[in-house]
Image 1: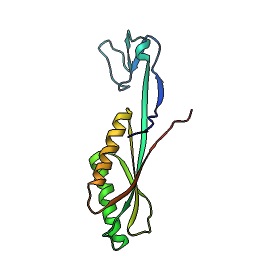
Image 2: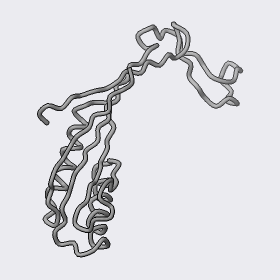
Image 3: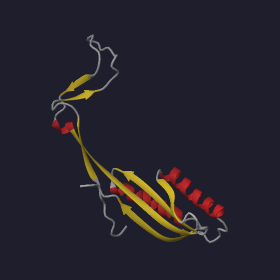
Image 4: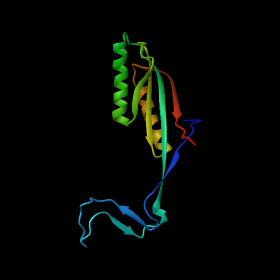
Amino acid sequence: GAGAVFVGWDQTIASGPEDSILDIGEPDRHHADGSSGPRRRQGMRAARRYTRRRVYVAALEIELHIGASGSLKDKRAVVRHLVDSARHRFGVSASEVAHHDRWQHAGIGFAFVASSAGRVEEVLDQVERFVWSHPEVEVLATTRHWLEPDA
């Protein structure tokens, strides 16, 4: 969305000596030359020695009004449907995060992790459209929070 800040962090992983990468196999495996254990593949240069990974994490918080709810039990049925469906359809983490004791008001949080900010944005957009599409709820507010790594 407008004004969103995309934040990620790098992780560098070293993998063996400069000219080889260690293949980890079964320790009791015997090779054609009579040796056993892991093999080294020669010729892997520094370009393969370090892998850079970016991780993007964001949360979507949605405040809801559930006008037809006449009890906490009614509200929790609606919230449970939204949370469980979003988990299964979009692979997000989800939970009721606010207004647990109010029978017509709910706060639901959704979180997603991916290797690109665009993918996180895409999934959270789908989740938001999914919640908006339910006629039994009125969306009062939505907020996105991007996790910033420690420097």
